[in-house]
Structures are given as structure tokens and as C-alpha cells.
Image 1 (cartoon, rainbow, N blue to C red):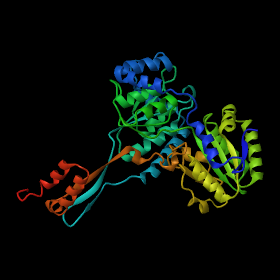
Image 2 (cartoon, helix red, strand yellow):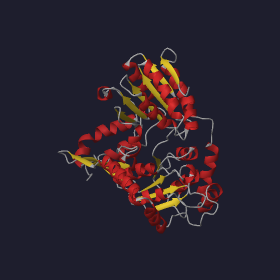
Image 3 (cartoon, rainbow, N blue to C red):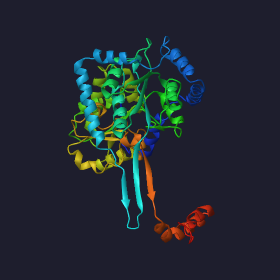
Image 4 (cartoon, one colour):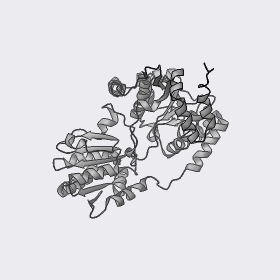
Amino acid sequence: MPCRILRVPAEMDVDALLSWLSGRKNPGNDVTARVRDILADVQQRGDTALRDYTRRFDAPNLPSRFRVPHRDIAAALKSVAASDLDILREAIARVRDFHARQAEQSWFTTSADGTVLGQMVRPVDRVGLYVPGGQGGETPLISSLIMNAVPAQVAGVTDIAVISPPRKDSTLNPYILATAALLGLTEIHRAGSAWGIAALAYGTASIRPCDVIAGPGNIYVATAKALLVGEVGIDMIAGPSEITILADESADPEYLAADMLSQAEHDPLAAAICITTNPKLATALRSALDRQLATLPRHELARRSLKDWGAILVADDTEAGIELVNRLAPEHLELAVADPFALLGKIRNAGAIFLGHHCPEPVGDYFAGPNHVLPTLGTARFSSALSVQSFCKKSSIIATSAAYVTEHGGKIARLARLEGLEAHARSVEARLKPDAN
């Protein structure tokens, strides 16, 4: 059997369930010390270190230049089938339309005494995007490039660098280059892993430093980004992929199995969970998982994921199922029920919510428009999807008059002295003197 069936709370209570799933946070592969050394090495030796690592691990004959020539980008665009380019263009347009609605405006308020308060929204100056090349560079994560580039562009960022690990022949997959071209991105560098992230953060002679770094990657990439928090902005520290499905008797077990496997095939640490109140559906779903696994190209990986981190949970009632969902705070949540909108208002914690029997998670991964970079490992309790705001900074605007300080200066000085900050108080009181302008 590929997936366990558990009655909750009889066979496992919620706290035990969360404790079990927390094992995905640390798979016993601590690379922190090695990544810290790589970051320091690139910071000190720049291009030389970046070239050494890239030639050692990715492309033994990497040219002296990391940047992909414009002619290679143009050639890649011509090499991709016109039908695929049309699909990419439509996906980009849909993602751009969604994110355009997130854009915030600067705002100001004025008072009768002349006080002006407000917030000025500005994009960061420069963004670095990491794009995994996939297995041997042949399964490029082009959707991740779209999902990271578009909100940065909508935010107003005009200086965007893309890096991706080269294949053994020093090239990048033409789909990465073609997608970048469709997005209007021309600065693309051949560099990957922690050393590529270090180059984006610290800068080298070839790659200028960035203010925000975004994009998924392996444990070396994730660890590098985590270690750089505070020195640069990052999108988020993402964990393994996950899906939770809340299903009632109207759900098709074949659909449910296909949706669980869409996440299980990602990673051995991916978690695929279905919650239902119907024991018969649970049994049918397990059988469907077994049948579909047999024909899945990544069946070994998916089977391991389901065995270690998959579960079909039978809850006492729908309210108990909803509470389970909110405690899990999943990256992806599917409401595979007869009336999903009736339950939507009860969902407090989820990265993205897919409603109904005909809205599988891959719709959001590739095409619908919302961002697929989502909080994982329960962090949807307090964080959100990647958005236009991830690439913006906000400055508070304050302009007060002499009349304002005259009216409120004594109160401000009192608050400062309560905190033991005499110079703060005197700064205000200097403007209260009779001869102050």
C-alpha cells in the first residue's frame, strides 16, 4: 500500500500529526558549515571562486565569461517551437494581469495645521533571480522564472539579473533563455548553487550585487539564502512541497490520487495529505494511488514520498477536517467538496486555495495567474505568497510645522524622558524656545 489511512484523532491526534510532519524540516543533511565557507570564499575571491566551483561541479570547460551572449538568447528564442512560445506568452500575460492588481500606490494625508504624513512606495534597485536547471539541465523550472520575474517587473524593478547552473557543455537550456527573452530579461549568467547566490549577494567583477534574491533551489541554495537574511532581501526560506486536500463524498478518488501525486513526484520530502469524513472514499483513494503510481515516470520518488510523508486522514466531521487544515497551514489546499465556497470563509491558514473538483493544483503552478512561490512547513500561519510587495520598500513621510511642534512638543518630550532619552526631548524642546524659527 502506498499511503497510510489514519483516523484522526483516534489513531493519531493533531499534535502527533504535526510533530510527525515536522521531521521534514531537517532531513539530517546539514550543509550550513559548507555553505558558509562557500559564501566567504566567493566574497573574498569573487569571479575566481565562482569559476572554480562552476567548473568543478557543473561545466568543466566553462568560458571565461559567465554572462550568456545576446546571440545565444536570440538563437534559443528561434529554436523553441512557436506553439510553446505561444503558451509561454499566455502564461506570462495571465501572471502579469494578476500581479498588476497587487501594485500599491504612494499616499499622503494632510491636516489643517499643515502636517503631511504618508507612505512612499518604491521598487528595490536590483533583483537577482535563481532558476534551477532541473535534472541535468533538461527539466528547467521555467515557471519559476515567470513567477519570480513578473512581480518584480510589476513592482517597477528594471535591473534584473538571472542566474542558472550551466549544463556540462556550458550552455543553458534554451527554454530558460527563451522565457527570459519573452520577459525582456537580457542579463543571464551561468552560475548555480550556493556560489551563484553568493555572487548575487556580494557581487563579483562580472555580477553586480543585488538587493533582493528570489527563486527556488536545492538545499545549498536554500541554506545560502537563509544565511544571507539581513544582508539582502530574499523571497522566503521554502521547504519541500506539500498539498492538503479536504474531500467529501462528491470527490472522485482518481482526481484526488492524481493531485496528491502531482506533489509527491517533486521530492522525497514532499507531503501529500487528504482529509475526508468518508472511510469508503479513503479506501478508494488508496487503491487509486496504487494504480496511478504504477505508470508514473517518477514512481519510485513519489512512492517514497507517500510512504514517508503521505496520509489519508479520516476525520469525524467537516468541522474537524477544517480545523485539521488550519493546524497544518498547508502550502497548497484543495477544497474537493460539493460547495467549496461555503467552506472558504472558514480557512484561516493556507498558501493557495483551489476550489472545486476541476481546479487541480498545477493550474496555479503554471497558468492561472497567482504566484506559485508559497509558504511551506506551516509558515502559511504568518506569511504569504511571493508578490509585488516582495520587491518593494516603503518609506514613511513626515512633515510637521512649527505650530505642530508648539502644540505637541511637550508631550513628545515627556515620552522621550520616560524612556530616559534626554537628547530626544531636548531636540524637540529646542524648537519651543521663544527665539526658535
